[in-house]
Image 1 (cartoon, rainbow, N blue to C red):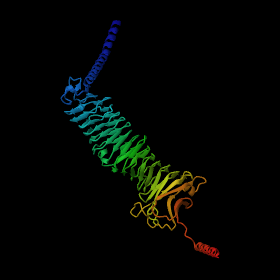
Image 2 (cartoon, rainbow, N blue to C red):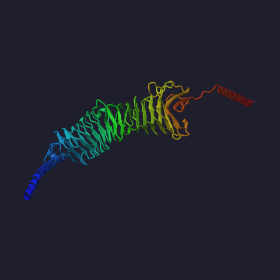
Image 3 (tube, one colour):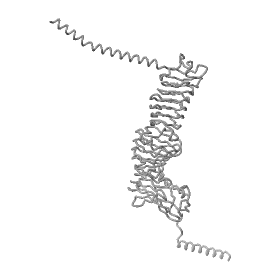
Image 4 (cartoon, one colour):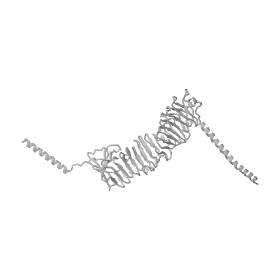
Length: 519
């Protein structure tokens, strides 16, 4: 009985071992397959260096142009190519080629690529200080990143993106002077400059996480969507630079990420009627003008570093719910609506209206050496039409002192809205214009008055004053600020009589003195 039990136990163990052995065979097969795949990939990832040593031409198909020169690079999307210092710098992609990546080593010569389409699956890297030019068409076969550490990359032959994300990074500059077509998003990072100068037709989104993307027209950003896309352009630590005046398509929605964003208008006027969303701070820089006409919803603040920001929306808030600061060399203007608090810093300016008009804002803070630029077109007209008006839904706080005044810069306009003589201004007549209306009152620092905190610049006011002077007065129970013009007083009748008698006395005295001398 014991032997039978033992045999049964042994038989049971053999039955249990069968699935274990099967599992081991399966695992062995999988590991062998993985090993073979890795070996195949390693073998296929061919790495070659361009030498241009054939002595006859710069064709890629010439094996003697490469090191090792046993064969030209494999044309299957896996070759890793290096370019260094060389004498043959005209590299001719003589047939359509697909590689993994291409690197310009430190010290590499300046190359120019010509010929057929070159498809990249792992990107381009320029580690040299040279300018590398691709005059042939490039294509993107998979998601990848292009990097320029110092030298410039110029893509003059165009780029076809087959729907993959293209990253641009590094401290160097990359210039897409050839047209981009296809799909796939463009993501800019690093400190370098990406210039888009062709009429591009690609349909992907553009994200700027670092550095600068420079454009001169709306077409440089690709085909505009047929309907609004909130994040067609995302600014999250980077800058969008415009080098000419144009209108940015309103369907290119702008999202400002938590890292903030910068719109730099180097010259001309950029106009945008779309929607800005997001939470980061939007900075306006550059000497040019940015005009916003839409009702925006972003919650971040707006900082005008330089140039002008004009807010000309008719509903909502042109700058979202955040606050707006006109910093040194920055000007805030327009005839729109701003929900947040407006701060005018030293050197910053506030210019209500487009020419003459009304600007609506939340609370305002005017700091010493800040400027209110005011235009008068018709001295006897109505506020907001004949002269500029600020309507403040809240209070105005003036943080200025005699040694650090807030300046009112006056300008006169003709009927044609040109700098010149304002209509219906008589220098011998008194005038009073309401220029600021508040719902919460006007507050000055303790011990200060209108005369001690406000100063004037009148070089831009071209009507003759004949000695008259401007001043400011807080009126309407402290809620309004009025601009006052006071002419030189004309002599009264009594003063004329006194002056006449004085002259008569002087004449008589002179006559008596003359008679006395003769006698």
